[in-house]
Length: 174
Image (cartoon, rainbow, N blue to C red; front, side, top):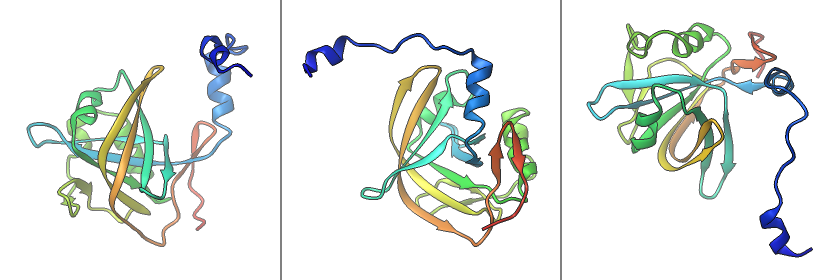
């Protein structure tokens, strides 16, 4: 095949609407994470994200995405590091808290601890956490895609919180 032809090719218009696409994506279960960092004034910033996955073992890379309309977009584009915490099955309240409400209310009453390189994470017994150097971000569609290089991580023998079909699965299974 002529490689020049690949450059001029493009995808066909979708044969579905947004609702159908979301329903089809909902058939794939994902874990639920809270991603935290600090803004330029040192204030904690965090949100619930289910678009998290591994990319590479060498170097250790992970990927997640954030809507362009997110109030936290600028902070995560500019921060040097962030922490991804994989929530455990019994942390639905935290998932909902960091998915809704005002950014300041999300941290009310929460204790933060610093990871080895100074990134803030919630002081809760999550299933796992990853402290990441903010390696790259890419503009794609209505999101930015962020690549984090994992500098530190830990895990516990705790079942993860699962999001599937527009809802949470609270069944603990490791």
